[in-house]
Image (cartoon, rainbow, N blue to C red; front, side, top):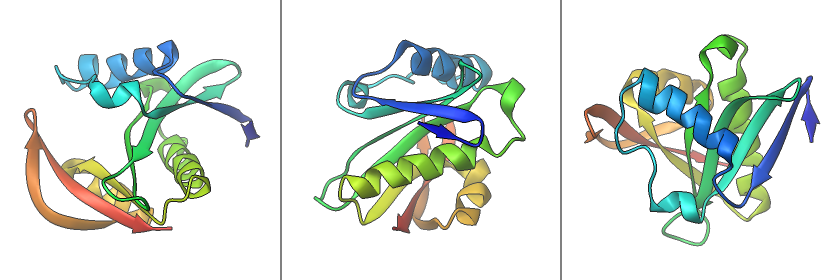
Length: 143
């Protein structure tokens, strides 16, 4: 599909392009060691393309109840930041989750970017917690 000179695709598996983006952003840039997990085996993975080049990614999967979906692993390559692509990826993930029956969507936000998610309509719930060495907070949005 196309949106504003960008195209995107959803995959029912961890696409190699999504893997490379996550390795670049979360492993090399941010230092996470446990980036890939069992969720990757059943999550839907989205890749955002600019002129055929993969520039961003995210994933979604059903939550603990029938109506909630979890979004996450949203990443944009450094050369493409500042173009509001994180918000675009988030919006596309939300649309897909809603089509699959989600009412709320939730995510585990890095605490340092909580403000970004609040601007997108998310509300922090619960206490700050650590994932590896990084502070995170659970955030929820009603669709």
